[in-house]
Length: 380
Ligand SMILES: *Cc1c(COP(=O)(O)O)cnc(C)c1O
Image 1 (cartoon, rainbow, N blue to C red):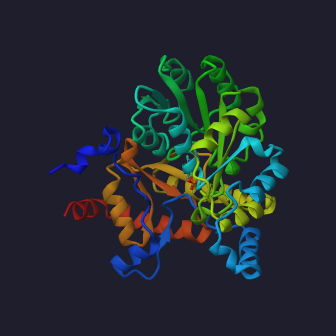
Image 2: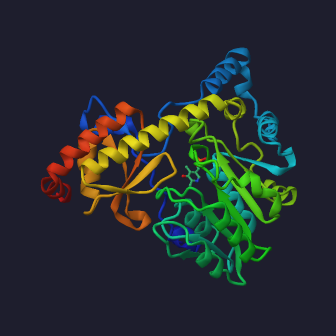
C-alpha cells in the first residue's frame, strides 16, 4: 500500500505547523476559570474599529442575502479606501486573507525548489513556513540584539536568492530598524531580489522619524510593503491584509491569488476601518501607556523586556519560560511562549487594557514568587 505521508513534498512533510495562542474559551473550559485575560496574539484590546463594526452591521441589515453571493473578487471598495487614504492606485494593491495570505502569495509566486529566501533569526514564524512549504531553502541570518542584522542579511544573498523577508517592527521581539539602515540595505541588495517589508505593527509606532514603507516604496521597484487590518484596526477575526508594490509585481501576485480570498464582510469592515484615524490614534495611545505600565511593572519584578515598538513585549524571564507560561494559564492569563523562535527563556506578552495589564502583572508576581513549585508542577 502506498504510504501517503511519503507522497507529500519534503518541505511539507517536515513542516511544524504554526502554533496559535490558546483561545479564551478553551482555557475556561479546561480549568473552570471565571476570568481569563488573553495577552497572547497581539490583538487590539479595544476590539474592532467602531466604524468597521457599524459598517458590517449596516451591510448585514441592508442586504443579508448578499452573504449568499461571492464577494467582489477585485475588492473594489477596499482598494478604493486604501487608495483614498494612502494614494496608491488599484493596480498596485494585492488584497489578502490576512497579510499572512499575502506572504504566502509572495512565496508561491517567487519561490520554489532551488531558490533561496532570507529572513532573520527570531523573525515572524510565517516566513520560514511559507518558504519551506514551497520547497525553497530558507537562510536564517543571526540576529543582532534580537533584531535584524541588515548588513549581514544583505551579505547573505546568493545567486539563488529570490526573496528577503523583513519585519519592522518584528514579531515576537518588537525590534525595529531605522530608515537610514533600510536604505543602506536596499542599496546593497541586488535589484532582482524581491524585498518584503512587513509592517503589521506599523500603526503602533509613534516615532515620527520611523521608517514608513509607503514613503520609500516608489524608490524601489523590487519592494513589497505588507500591512494588515488584524492588529491596530482590530479585525483579526475577519482575516484581511494587503500588499502594495509596483504594478508589475502586483500583477504577478494576483495571478496566484484565489479569486475570492477576502470575504464580503471583511471588505466592508476593512474599507471603513482604513479611514478610522481616530481609532488608530486611540489604539496607539493606549498601547504607549500600556507598554509603560508593563515596563514599570516588570522592572518592579526585576525583569527586563527587549525594547519594543509593537503592541507586545518580549520578556526575559531569566529561567525556562514554559513552566511560567503554564503557571500563568492556571492564573487565567494567556501569554505566548516563544521557544519555537529560539527564545526559550522569553515570554511574549501582548499589551492589553490597563486593567488586564494589572491583572496579568499581579498573576506574574504570584507565579514568580512560587517559581520553583511552578516549575516542578509543569514537568509533571
Ligand atoms: C500578525 C502578523 C502578521 C499578519 O497577520 P494577519 O492576521 O495574517 O494579517 C504579519 N506579520 C507579522 C509580523 C505579524 O505579527
